[in-house]
Structures are given as C-alpha cells and as structure tokens.
Image 1: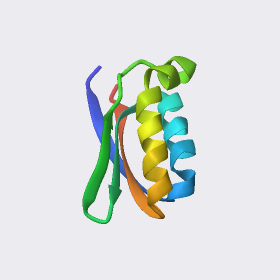
Image 2: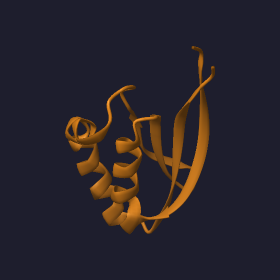
Image 3: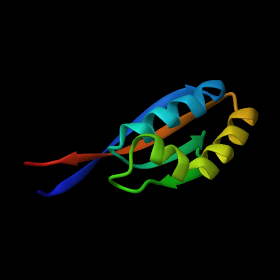
Amino acid sequence: MPEDFKREEIKIEGTELVKKVKELIQAGNVRRIIIKQDDRTLLEIPLTIGVAGVAALTLFAPALVAIGAIAGIVTKCTLIVERIDKKT
C-alpha cells in the first residue's frame, strides 16, 4: 500500500500549542510537526510512524517540554502538520 503525505497549516495561539501537539501525537497518523513563527522555523519534530496514544506521549516527552518553552514565549504561531495519506 503506497503512502503519500498531506501538509496542513494550523494557526494557533501559544497557549494552545502543547494541547494541540499532544492531540496530533495521539492521533498516530502524523509524520512530522513543524512549529513556525512568521518565516522562522522554531522546532521540527519527526514522529515515529506507528506509535500512538500514551506510548507516543511518553516517547516524545522531551519534545513536549521544548514545545512548552516555546509556548511560553510566542503569542501566535503556525503548526505545519504532515499527515500520512494511505492510498489503497
């Protein structure tokens, strides 16, 4: 089954950043998350395919700490989400 990736941009407030990233990680169909402010990339997180739920949150806990620090200093940012698009 070939796989392609879809990119989605989400404008978000810094206060909602950690919550949204946790939701995306738990979904399990996200390949990469990029956090940008204006034209600057603040953080890029490649995610392991096939890891979802609580195990994923545990695995990516250090990244969530970094995201929390970013959330404390930015007011608005953009999440670029690469999702797996499985073709049948």
